[in-house]
Length: 559
Image (cartoon, rainbow, N blue to C red; front, side, top):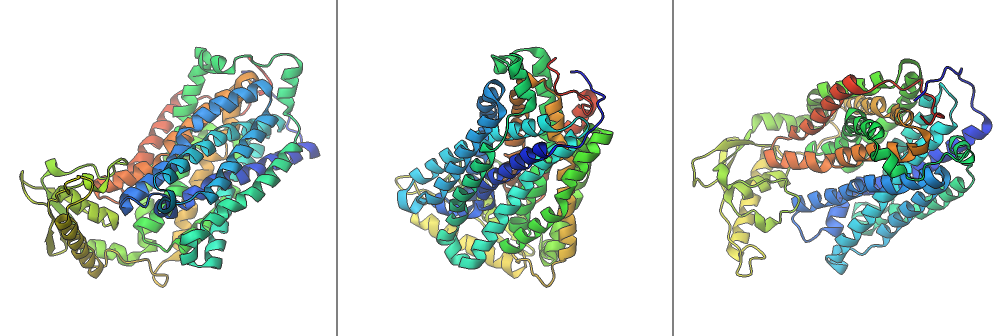
């Protein structure tokens, strides 16, 4: 594509209006999407009540991930429409789909009411949300970039980049407000539905805003000249010169950006509430505080990328994340719950078992009755209570045991009932007794200690969270401008949307589920960090070698 030397000019009032409108509408759309992620623990109980707590949580995360998995397909469907009929009307449709699906989640009966139909409908609604979001981001980023003056694209598309964090922040505020108003019991029972139902108001505001927009000048010019693409999918992915850029944009930019983004916000929240055992309200407030402090850095790094380039900032964020995660998260645990860290050192936990009898604890499709060996029962008990442990191999045929400090508790091999759909009464009783003994011993040793506000170093917890958010702003702030600049106008919506949503939908969206499964499988509470570290490192290497700087590209060119 051609480059331009046009001097930057101030934005007109009309340009500022449409960019503000686009950004505000996207905030609402991300609010819809993140409600589910923020309420995953509640959703697990409401819609996956037929499973044990660990399986229910994994399934809830998988249902969350279902929305991410279909995002690339939404990118294809809506990207094609955006390149053929225009940016404005395409992402008007996406917000209607998104808001409607979210509102229906608030009305959906629970598992206790309609049984298996509840999680099935929930997953279907999540997939609708994912399809809509797949078309949303590419439209918003393209729309804003095509309105921005040359030399200011990083600064102005950075406003779009703040919307995801602001949407998450808004969802956390609404959840906290409803929870504090109704109380924990009412919130867990029915109050969790209120934030979903409120989305209908946001939908109305967003539709009104988007109806007032004008079409992108780049698309309008191209349409007037009769140069719109008749087959954007085949142009984007059927021609090697374009497909090559799509692939590089994925593995050399968005994959690493995505894992840093989701680790810094979603996984940090999961780590705080589950691993560090911080009260949900406190954890949400701390995350919200870090977002307030960190969000302006989206604008800072977006503007900086107009001066020094997009590539060094994005890849620098990936490298710093890969080098620091294994230092930062232990610090977060220590500052949030020092008593728990002390207990883990004083009361080491080991599970001794025949490796041949141990199943993969992180399996998303496993049922409680699939774990019948003494090894599985011991590991399942530790995992359910987020008790870290080390594995010790035992000779074949050895009955597994779990040792907490100097107390060793023998596990058991369970049997199923005649229908093979549940544990036998004897085994169920023995498993309950085993779990009770393990939990009581762990509690006595401080291994299940909740974080104490009096001993929590809140300033340092906040500092660590802000650091993680700043890494998010480095990789995410300039990414919209860079993706827009990598592709010609006629296929821009389609081409940039796919690598973005594969990266963020698959590499990023699957991070909470994958990382939790890795922790559950190994007993190492930090093991899940290998996933973002490896992906971010790969993106840094590939991006440095093969990605070209784009800040001076003329995005009105179609070559």
